[in-house]
Length: 308
Image (cartoon, rainbow, N blue to C red; front, top):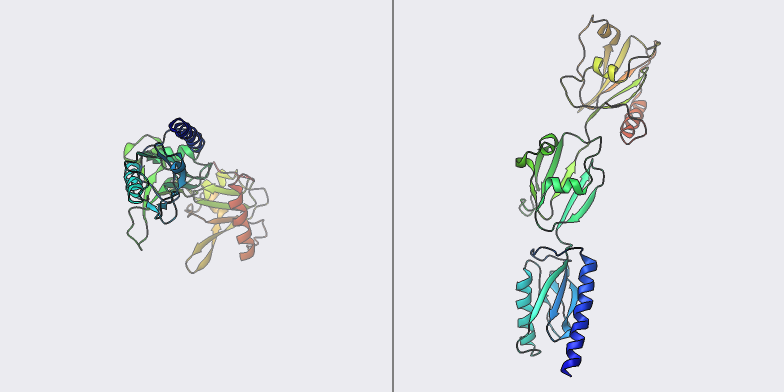
């Protein structure tokens, strides 16, 4: 009988080892257990109690022959071992149980990376995860990424209050500044906003959306250079469309005088639309403006992009 029970225990141990290997490619570091985590429970010489079990959304696990669920959420594996052993003694199932609990799979320690990255994803935090590690998992930032990373810390927010958001310079992060390579925790969200843009349409050689990076240098003359100049029959007056709280403001721009250096250059703001009509000087309607801005946004995804 002893040989038979030992044989069953070895079979159970082998089966659990296979399950753990398929759930994780490497040994997972010990972290506090959370809801939906997968645990491997081994009770020595009692194969009918040894199994893998997932933590319920309420934070408990259930084992056969134990009437009450066992608390697991928020505990370390050795704490759960003690809880199970005490339950087995209380139920008069074993006198001196030997219990081993290991974490087979984490599902409660999510970190989300989204926005202007090459591969948005959600992964499980195992061990120390820093901001650069998360961006490497997302295969880096996409070409239309803005200058900053936004990190929303879930654990820093009190119940019922908004989560704190930390802004980090991508340039400083990629230059290796350790002070901005933040340590991430379970529930954190990493978001990279797309770069702001300005748009130019009409009688230019290459219309489209252009990154708005250096505000001091983004002028009408600069945007014309990026769009490779005007076509032969472009009008002398362009129209600048700027969205404000009161609505869209329409500003005439004496573009011919600017190019002839008879008038000061005009500073552009993020999301401005510069429209250069033909020599008849036709303006844009609001419907046409919205369509052009939508088209300009689509160019950033690779349909047509003239940004530098």
